[in-house]
Length: 297
Image (cartoon, rainbow, N blue to C red; front, side, top):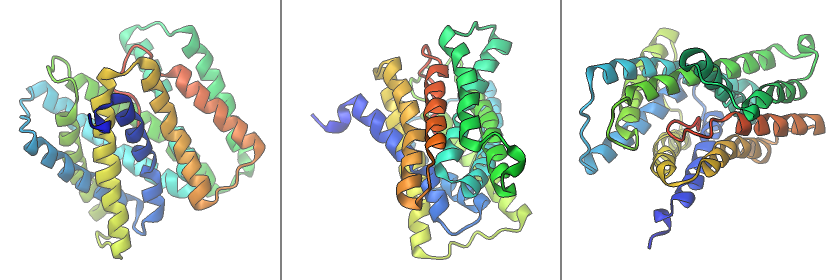
């Protein structure tokens, strides 16, 4: 039996591949918006190819199309904010902040769905704030301007990514398919169009300077956006909620590791403690009852 037939192996390989997403952004020598465009361009090409090879039909309702268009706008905003955060504060912290979407999703569940938060989720919120304070420091006014913007963009990423997940979940109401491959392919294509228009409006260039940059961008779109996501999506229905939560935790953790190993990010003891507390909060705050739309980037 193939090793990839093991859903747990696919889950954690997928999380590892997706954890490389901010690394590609930092390595490539193009603008933040341009790298976002090529992520969804190459990623959507790979996803559409997969759908054609597996002969999956769209068959989406009118409501699903509307929600997917909304999801596409949220996802384009997610890339716009996140890529700038990566370039300002690095892959590790930017990805950690983006995963604070767990708490936005929790708030949405309370306000929109009248869901009562669990004790673990209630504990997770103050833990996340403590972790964030330990990472960025208590004297905000002393931080460099770029660092402040990186933190702000990272938190805005969490907000719009939660909007994307909620819209994607709404688009799948009544769907008979276990995996949202078709929906994510549609979002990727539409997001590519939005990002292309944004590149033009901002006056940025579509030119990829070197073959090495092309390799980073193809890796970003195919390995992280397409294959990593497909591995995770295909495994979630077959694994426990604990394992799904660990995959959610693994992705920002590995992004921090790559940041230290590849970009020599200095890690003070207090910052390391803060990151550990924030990761614990993300794990506790993730809804254990839902594996449908885990916030894995």
